[in-house]
Length: 343
Ligand SMILES: [Zn+2]
Image (cartoon, rainbow, N blue to C red):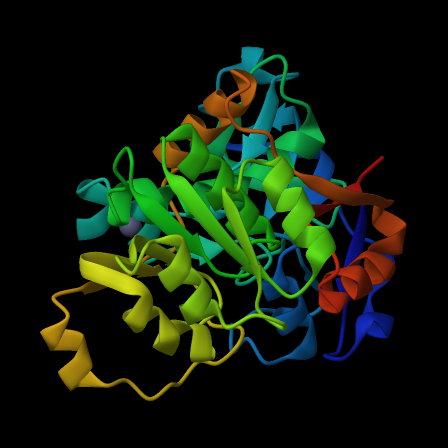
């Protein structure tokens, strides 16, 4: 099979196509012939060598993938050959305390595709059969790949961790990113009012088209003052923060009492000053959220199939042009997900 791999850390130029042996499924495993994968910022961190994950070279990137089951191992129903599936990118053990509690997103033995084990920038992937999620008939491979991480992560953060409620006002920082634009759609489907921020007016226009009630360009407008004005000085009930850095620090002052911030990333700054006095006086909660469970992935795929959620696809490239696709990701001009189509 063909795979887009790298043998040394570096820029997009280290990516190249190699012919690798086709995987052979063991007991309980299947091979999925991939049709689409989606890019994530972690791909860049892994390729650059800053991710601190342990893996073997040559390494194949890619968390998300969707395709068709082509080979099944012993113990797997052969009628699953030909099934259209999305592949869960979190390999869980099914035996640890957290798996047994249904919180497999924090499985202590978990391995992530493209991070610890070969990922989905390839024609085929080997995976446990029970990590294949059947696609609704009307969800295509690119939509499925675009939905898995973005919508699944946003769902876990908003619905499971932050317990979003009907009628709440949510501030979404950097609303143009894949996961933040997914959060916008989930918030609107759940009856929330959404305030979105971004650095570019074209992204803010797309967010408005997706239902954002208020948008703020943070390069030209003081976000705290704008949120104060929009909410009549009350503040918001919930902040969805994929950014970290100064946005994380400022969010404390935009939450109303009993407000929550849910944190799922820190691309703009991983270590920040935090005023504990202000924090405890404000009676607010900071909540952390990481990835999702297979059950949550199934939920979002079902909602895509029912037309409630619409994965935003910014652009598509063939697998062979993965380097170019990654450059677009790094430029941060995309609204929604960047897809690689695989033959
Ligand atoms: Zn486990």
